[in-house]
Amino acid sequence: MADERDDRPRRRRIVLCMGATCNISGRAEPFYECLRAAFGDPGPAFMARGPVSWEVASCLDMCDEGPNLTLYPGGDAVHVLTVERLQEIIEQIKAEIGDP
Image 1 (cartoon, one colour):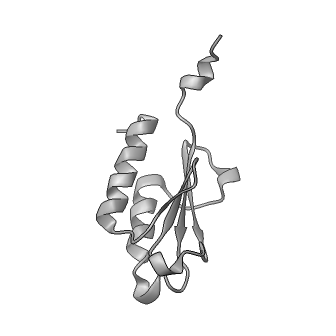
Image 2 (cartoon, rainbow, N blue to C red):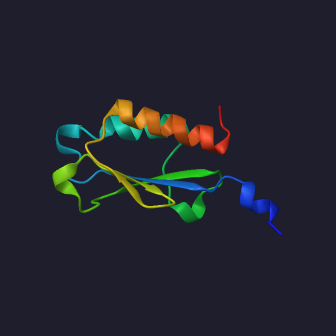
């Protein structure tokens, strides 16, 4: 028998790389601002109160493909990030968690 909790959306975690390569000339700063506008201030996942938490990393070890971010659950990496792509990701996450 299926547990009712199986139908609830899983929590999301976003890790934005703000390392030296990904943030060269401040190019990751617009991503930080987009995430903050969408989900509030960053913080560690264990302190998250809502369905989405996000945090910054000093390096995700994918420097040649940056700017980068990683999405959990799943650990999917997004490379050569753009503001437009990040907005798509934010909208997709909001739709999945039922946030208009």
